[in-house]
Amino acid sequence: MMNRARLRKGCVIAAFVLGIASPIVTPSAGGEPIPVAKLATFKMGTVDAVYTSSIRISGTDYRVQSDAKIMDHKENEVPLEEVFLRSEAKFHLNKMGEIDLMVVMRPQ
Image (cartoon, rainbow, N blue to C red):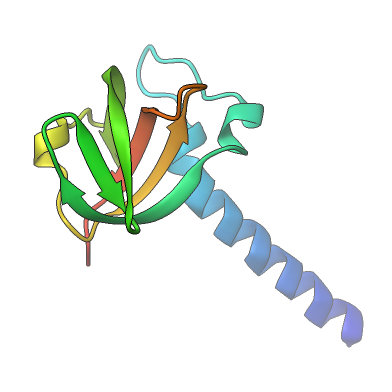
């Protein structure tokens, strides 16, 4: 009985992790998947403010690289100015601390 409960818990955790990572890992038509090493460095937070070339996420301002790829949860590219406040964001910072890739999910 204990093994079944542990197995179910493991399956639920795996499904949750895959559900979160799936929109980021799944390549779009003609696109390349994001390497696992890069995926591990993604940060998460809530969008507080959107500016012309920067964004505030969970109280921290980040500059957005001019050629950054910003996508919604369905992997449609979205311009920075169309990112909604209170959206959940998963993002990657380049070596200079700028966002070069971000996935946003509209608030529910």
